[in-house]
Length: 225
Image (cartoon, rainbow, N blue to C red; front, side, top):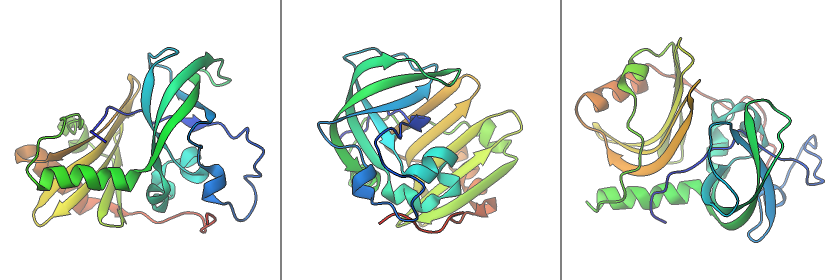
């Protein structure tokens, strides 16, 4: 899979007959099925229509509601879906757009990141769609946190000006390879996958954030099997 621009829905529909309050949930039951349809709410700035093909990130219930920063282990249980937009539906939440999606493929997020990392380390040139870290925003962070997810590092931060950022990177010696980037502010959400070796001031800025970030731990007990 080449590095696509990607969407991170703000909420996945739970209208599937599953008791999400149960103490144990099976990931296989929650995960959208290839060939099936599923609904998700997106940022209201997303401009797509029926017939469009999207790449989207699906994550389990706790991180879907509260973000990966509340349950970082769920990054390892998140998936990249390729899906066709079937139709637009009314959303009950102001400022959001709901779409019904037909799932074409489903691949573990960390598997996608490893393929991008292989391209970078082999000196190949993947599509450069990794969003450049906004240095000004990262230099103004009021809070940041980090967590190890297998061989990767999840780094997230917020600023006093309502910006929220997240990266998934691979730390290699004194270097950093960016693989996932998210920037959210009142102007909308901007998200992408793509392998890029950070350099210069960009590298220095992210290394400072990594050095000062607080460790993140799961806020809820394990419930997925």
